[in-house]
Length: 340
Image (cartoon, rainbow, N blue to C red; front, side, top):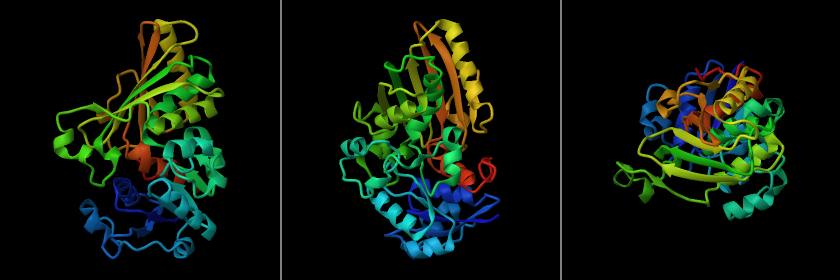
């Protein structure tokens, strides 16, 4: 099998990571890459690290041509703009993996409240499969549209969802404290992500207002069976890539090491057959997963709570690696192809 891929919005960090991963994928090829302002340039002119590895010229989007020449489109556009483009691509008959938040949430009201826009394709909200193969592989396999997960939510949902489903934690009192590398803010110029603003500094942002908070609650609720209450606080750290989430939960029964053992066993039972989730004994760190599609998770006792620790690469398992994994599932090939 040779899967032909279109990359819609190729100039950002997630587009670069998709192109990099596809360049080494044994059963998929990047055939079309689009960009508005950079159309006509080679992708290596925009992303010099791809020189000698990816030989393709950026072009403006033509949904009909994309659908005629490719098997799947990966859409790396901002929310709102993405939904409109995704609707055109789906109407043209191509399967789509969407990187934006436009189709992740169950509720149209929640989306429009948090994202402050009217949804361009409201009929698909709540009717689009969420792209975590660890829980939704069967639905992803037949989907015409997959909502690629958010980076912070991936780092929180994977540790929390099995515990909520198994009834091991109090879901009305969950605290998620996350640290992200600067690439999570995207490639466009912003004052807060300039070198002099981020170097030798760590800062919280969007406290109580970050849009990934409702996504975490939504998906843990969907998988776990009851709506959780999550306090989510993100932080920007002076590194290029990676997310470390420190999550504080109250076990329902038992405490201390007994609770840690029950949580760890629950994870091992849930993820034993999943290739990218590693339940580890050591404390996870972003360096352990940098450039990979893996998540590392561990638990520790602390008073009457248990501390869950989760590390991912925000550009890989948190974005582009997850999209490759979803593509593999959609086309019935090994999830690990192109990701090892």
